[in-house]
Length: 317
Ligand code: UDP
Ligand code: MG
Image (cartoon, rainbow, N blue to C red; front, side, top):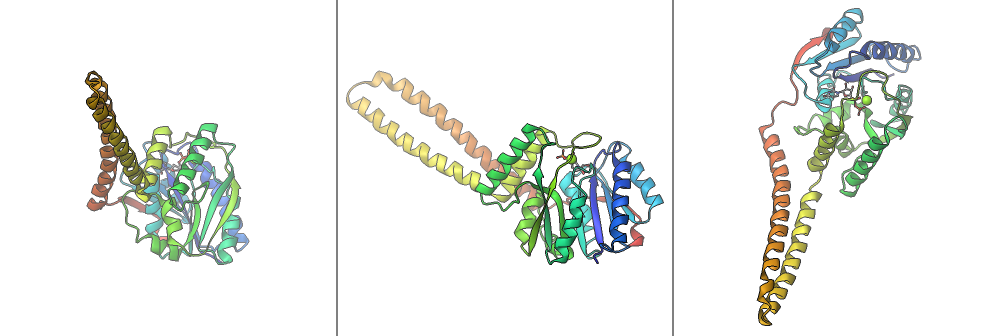
């Protein structure tokens, strides 16, 4: 039997939170009855600086149910940081940890299979979406491109896996050594190693409220994933520079030949074109290096990734 902690990050989820709680509660009781998890297994809602009444709802749930832990962050730190807060705050207190979104888009029944795989010896079990028909074509297309790109760049991500996963306490202990500020958990976990497995499920529709990942946030998240885990873009720029250099050599030969045969009137084109082209590519290269330098700057400061303001029902652990 496993003592389980379910970590649920919540940001402006007032429309769905009560429903999420009652669904989770029913499911949890079922798991407990079947002896799949221990009676002191818990659910932890992490309020990630919500501006609506999410925290009031969490507070009232915690008063009703001692098996629910409420964690309030001091402001909005982002989905990844909220997850890390919920996990690390309970390090060494549970046998295994499952992270799941508050909107119940991840099929709860997959948890059964996750626990099975855990019992069979897996320390990490990835929830993989094999049917994303509930997502828009655009979201599926961009996600697919992203996973392929990551794979191409040698980042060991699990295809179509988001942050619905089980990890055991040993994996969490290792994970806590990854102190990076630019968090991309789904890139870190596969790097940790250990025996892992996958569980497939159908991604459901968000039942209420709206996605907290609009296009802009999604792109920032993807860019963060790429630049935090891969230096391939820098290498590409280097190759781009090499190609530019070769073209510049060609142009030099051409200019010299023109000069030799007296076609010097053509000089304007051969000055203006390379100038614009090379200054443009220089800008791209500097900008990209700036991205990495910026990352180094953030990492060197090593600011706290989250700040916990209040914890409810903690003493029950
Ligand atoms: N979330 C969070 N902080 C944020 C944004 C999102 O804790 O700044 C939570 C959100 O409440 C949800 C999960 O992260 O539980 C995933 O967000 P969402 O379902 O909106 O993303 P999508 O499924 O649309 O990709
Ligand atoms: Mg969602």
